Length: 116
Image 1 (cartoon, rainbow, N blue to C red):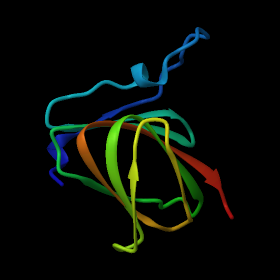
Image 2: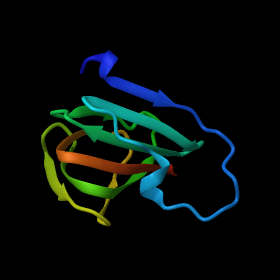
Image 3: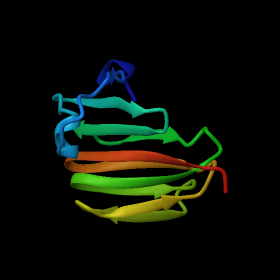
């Protein structure tokens, strides 16, 4: 993946108001936007991309939550493919490679759950 197509945003202090999860991260044409929402919570948005790979390097289990849109998510090296739609979740074992293939626009949360 072209590093120029990835846009990172840091964690800022959030005010204590109620927030809609989909509004915590925006889309950018042709980019993956990554925003840390805390030490173990990362939001991603994808628009106009064919896919992105990332590895669960923290040696912990993870929970993927689809916030908007649909994507095919493969964990392991092509072993397990899952279609994830809005509101659906996928638990991922520790030390797994994830591949996300957005089907149009897609937003998700990646939550690290700690060691198994």
